Length: 125
Image: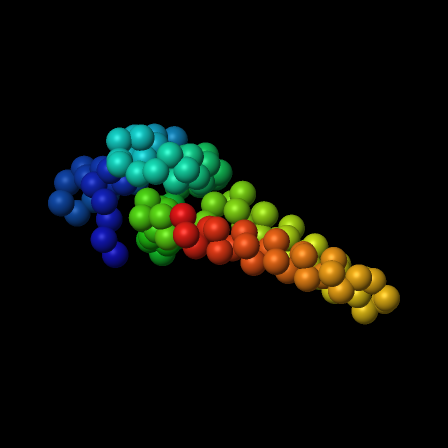
């Protein structure tokens, strides 16, 4: 596992003392604040950091850093975008259920189009 210098302190060549949660969060916040990225992703990264409830180590840390890298590169989606997709998909499912019970085909198709357009918009950003 590759460990970044700002995630661990070295007492000597054999002993490592990992940062506390607050120190790890502060290091990540400093990185996010001083790294060139779109404001949308900086906001999302800072949100993800604020949700941390324990010091990350090992595979958890690797996964978290990979997700931060994806966000920085703009190849991820925010929590808000996930919620929007889920809500739009629920609307499609409800319209489909309504259609199966005598509801409107047009309402079902409009719900699908709204969801699909939103996803396409995200892909273009």
